[in-house]
Every structure is written in structure tokens, then in C-alpha cells.
Amino acid sequence: MNSRNVVVSMAATALLLAATAVPAATPKIRVQALFESKALITIDGNRRLLKVGEASPEGVKLVATDTLTERMIIERDGRREILALGIVAMPRAAELPEPTLNASVVLQANGKHFFAEGAINGEKTRFLVDTGATAVTISGDEAKRLGIDFTKGSKIVTASTASGDVPTYLMKLERVQVGAIELTNVEASVVEGKFPKEPLLGMSFLSQLDVRSDGSRMELSKR
Image 1 (cartoon, rainbow, N blue to C red):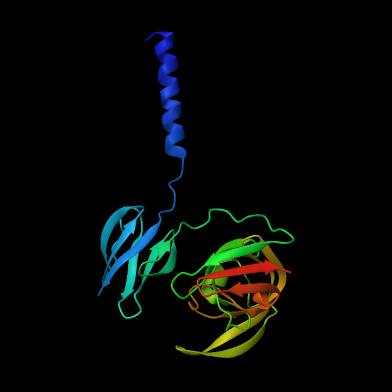
Image 2 (cartoon, rainbow, N blue to C red):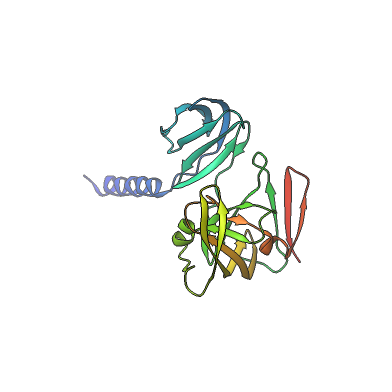
């Protein structure tokens, strides 16, 4: 092989390695139809009919369907999401923006709910906005994943849930971030167990912001 062919071969190999090193984008999902234990969805334009427990070639697993509320639960990237019929689930943000002084965040409704990408003490999570929750509320399982030692120095109370009375730990979180909005020393409660599945972004965070909502759009602004 002459020197020119060697150079061309090395360049081709470098391009191939660069191409394979680019991570795949998180797919965009639309729910088209729901059935008992099945769902018809499109993932980045590819139509998939999935049964409960089955995963698509794109790595989206169908966990459950509910034809009464027209919602389903999927799992992707190791996290569960609730999707509504006809609603597009956009890719999750890869990185959060740097916190800014006069930040604002616009959220679009997913069904009847608002979800927000954020972080607790620098660890990324996904919040369900809940104006009925007094404080930011986290399940014990999620708190452990986030590295929160909620048993140390916390006040313990009992909370009534669908599963019965469970211990709940009252504490303050060092940092809570949603988009470019970051607040410190935010009151929180950690409920032992798996629920809530997503941390609830309650009033201990929201009451420190200007909140505007018309039902399909919510804007959070730092004061």
C-alpha cells in the first residue's frame, strides 16, 4: 500500500470513529392510540405497536396503559414518564443551564400536568409541579439516588398515604434548581418508599417565584 492510500485509510477510520462516538439523541414520542395493555406510538416518526413490558428498538419500554384517563407510562433512559394521548413528549434536556439572577422558565402542559427538568443539590431530576404540595416532596428511593441523607438531623412525622401511614422526614435542601432558576435552603419532605415517582415541586419553592399559568403554559420567574 502506498503512502497516499495509507493516509486515505487513516482518515476514513478517524471519520468512522468520530461518527460512532456521537451519542444518539433522545427520541421524540407521540401517543397515537391506547388499548388495554397495548399502545400505538410514534418514536421519531417510526410507528410502534407495543405491548406492556415490551421495549421498542429505540429503547422505549411500555410499562402500563390506562384507557380511562387516556394515559400511559413508559420507561426510557432509566426513568419513568407519564404520557397522554395526542401529547408529544420531547427529548429530555441533556444539561441544565447555569443559574442566573433574573431567570425565567416556561413549561408546557403534558396532559393536565406540568413537568420541569431540574436538580437537587446538583443532581439532575425531573419534577412534577404541584401547587397543592406544601413543600418539595421526594420519595425515599429518589432521595437515596440523589445522595440525600434524609435520616440525619431531620424531624420525623407520619404521613397518611394510599399504602398506610409512613415515616416522613422534614428537612431543608441546600439547592433546588429548575431550568436557570436556583433557590437555596428550600424546605422539603422525604417520604419513605417509592412514591411520589417524580419529586413534587411544591410551594416551598414556587411561593418564592412569580408564577403565571393559563392551563396549557406555565411561566416561572425569579423575583
